[in-house]
Image (cartoon, rainbow, N blue to C red; front, side):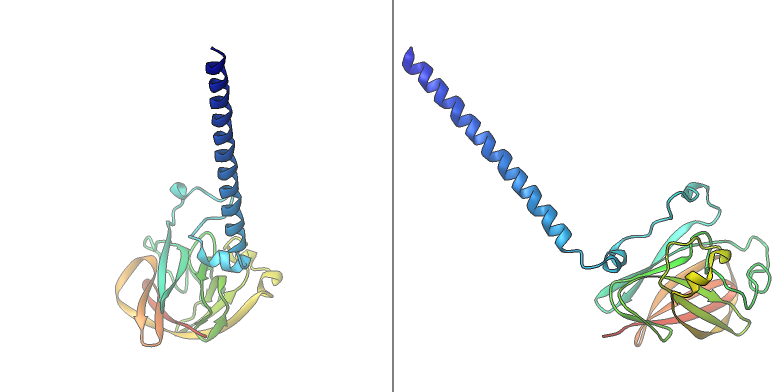
Length: 218
């Protein structure tokens, strides 16, 4: 009987030891995973370039928005940039020159400003940007548009929020020509096509098309 009790006690101690080792191993593995994740983050801009599209906190739920939230991918060599934007519709209105006035700042969509996330250094219509996230504004004209790339991405898209402090964060401005479309485009669309030196970021709405060249640099 004494022998059996001793064996039972030893079995209990062995079981407790195995459980303790398992718990310690699990904790060590978790700690190692956490360290590796934090160590792989090189900068906030690098993180922003890798995330998906998201709306601003506290903004109108997507299901209630008149202009749907969408995105398009831009292939830059072996990497992919992403443009996040909202898509207003014409709904029988004259768009450029009336709904969107000529020679006035435009958020290039609706709701939040249009945002481009690039994991690599890129050239956007001649404007050099480092890896990161940028807002994309435009100033539409009858024959050419001004493209504006800005480091600030936290402001609401309404043109009234483009304060001097936001404007001070501009990376650069460039001009591109416009093209007239034969067919009416009801809903504002941004899409990408391959080009000889990179990609073409194509903006289309109503009967207007604007092509923004984008290429990887470095």
